[in-house]
Image 1 (cartoon, rainbow, N blue to C red):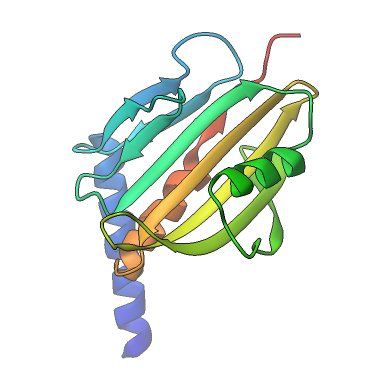
Image 2 (image 1 turned 180 degrees about the horizontal axis):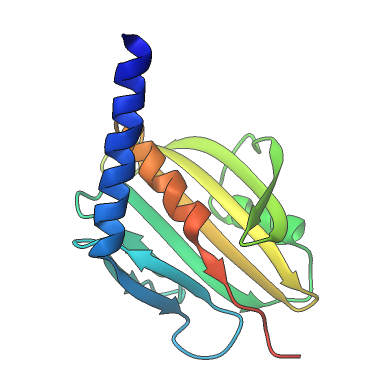
Length: 168
């Protein structure tokens, strides 16, 4: 019986994901040039650029947020990640994990934090090397109090991100 309930939940999540995809809008960031992120945003999700030029993506209920950027840099994904963690004052530095986005290899770091509104967050920084001069990063933020389904949706979003290559 428990297995049936689990299968039902998986099927329901799959249908919800299909429904979200059916009503999703496509987005490219940055709007021009390559490399760039390509993604599908469910209805109700919003985007804005922050002062640093990152694309901020928010779920309709604000339980999930992403910060995305693609930039030119002649250093490794590891070095970019270390700089980003230092800027965010993450201590101690979390364990480094191997990661990828759309087949581009890189690194990820996972940690917990509390924001200015005293909301506990689970955060994951993913930095991938696109080529010798381009790096992409995705920071995933999910409210720690969110349901397992919300965490799964955030993971699906990252898994579905696509990145174009820079022109040679």
